[in-house]
Structure formats: structure tokens, C-alpha cells
Image (cartoon, rainbow, N blue to C red; front, side, top):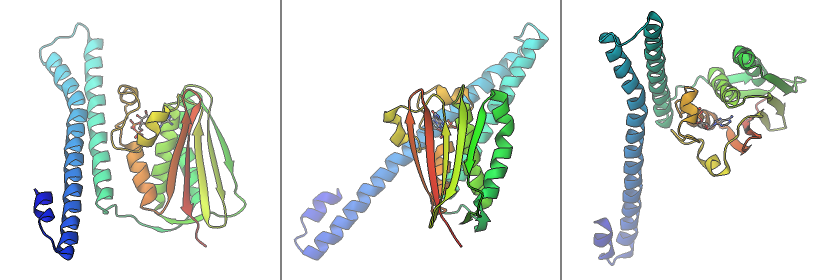
Length: 259
Ligand code: ADP
């Protein structure tokens, strides 16, 4: 036990060295807890889809279906669950690279307005499928330049917009974009089911789900917002969330503006 050993050393300098080692040990313990929690989460997240795969593959193998239609349903479940596992693994890989500082960003001066336009274009079909309206307030008077990886910024917007669509049954999604002297600002707001106050500080954490079943029903991995926050921060940006249950959710982002 480091604590006991260090406390017996009278010398001040040695004492502070000991304190540093103790702090590190605490950090290491925390790291260990986080790591085992992470492994537990990953195992849990993989167990569910794999249980489905095994069950339905077994049912097909033993001809436990009554009609051709039922057989097709089983095959569709196998396909959906395999997709889910793939998405989970891709998200985990993405996140671990970012957390190790190996995100491989291709940063350059890009016009935020162009990224916003392509992001909107890409989620249009999802919007139409749900019959939701997109309201935009975009100040196009001047270019809004940022130093970022355009593809990764698009990934941020698409993630937030797809979430907004997923968790909104009626009403609209609003996207506002404007610039101030030193920053660019983006707001993505929906009129959906919202996030309870007690969950707000946790939504950017890996695998945090507001209600256990809520996002899995939508096919989410619980990693989307953790990836978003990482992507924003490694590009010197900032993201915050506010929400009211059954009223809607608002994500506010900013990035430093460049000349
Ligand atoms: P998932 O892939 O499960 O959606 P995310 O990390 O993207 O995971 O989101 C974490 C949780 O935050 C989700 O499970 C969902 O409950 C909640 N959430 C995210 N965005 C919204 C939103 N726009 N409205 C309501 N809840 C949201």
C-alpha cells in the first residue's frame, strides 16, 4: 500500500514525490475501474445481438418456421443484428482511435456553410420518411471559415440530425448557423421526447442510454454522442446540450473562426 509507505518518510521532498505517486496510483485505479466498466459494457452490448443471431440461426437450422414468410423474417433479424454488431465495432474503433489521439484528422480551412448544406442533403430522406419539417436559419451573407476536417464535421452534424429525427415523432428539426467575430455557432434543435434533467450530464458518456430500451429500439449503439463530443473537442470546438422532457432537445456548438 503506497499510502502507508509514503507516510513514514519524513523528508518533505520525498513526501511530495510520494504524493505524486499516490495521485498516480489513484488515477491508475480509476483507469482500471473505467476499463473494466468499459469491457463490461462492450460485452453486454455484444451479448444481446449475438444471442439473437444464435437463436434465429438455430431456428433456421432446425426448420423451426412455419411459413416461407417466417423464414424470411428470421433472416432479416439476422441481417439487422449483424449490422448492429458491425456498427458497434466501427464506433468503438473510431472512439478508441480518437481517445488515443490517433484520429488522423485532415484539417484545412473549410467553409462551414458548405458542410451544413451537404449534411442537410444527406438526411433529407430520413426527414421525409418521418414526415418531419426542417427549419433552417442560416446566415449566408459571408463565408464561415473554420480549420477542421470537413468529413468529420459533417459526421458531427449528421449524427446530431439523425438523433434529432430518431427521437422526434412530430414537429420539426431546426438548424441555425451564424458567425460572430471569433467563432461560428451551430444550433440543432428538435421538438422530440427530450432528455430528463438527471441524464443531461451523462449523455456524452460512452453507452449512456436515457432509457435502457429506448435507443436500442432505434438501432443506436449508445456511442454516437461520445464520438460527437470527441470530434468537436479535437477540432477545438465546444458542445453543450439542454433539454426538456416531451418538449425537445437543443445541441449548441461552436468552433473558432479563421480568416
Ligand atoms: P444512440 O446511438 O443510442 O442514439 P447516442 O450516444 O447518440 O446513442 O445518444 C445517447 C442517448 O441520448 C440516446 O440513447 C438517447 O436516449 C439520448 N438522445 C440523444 N439525442 C437525443 C435527442 N435529440 N432527443 C432525445 N434524446 C436523445
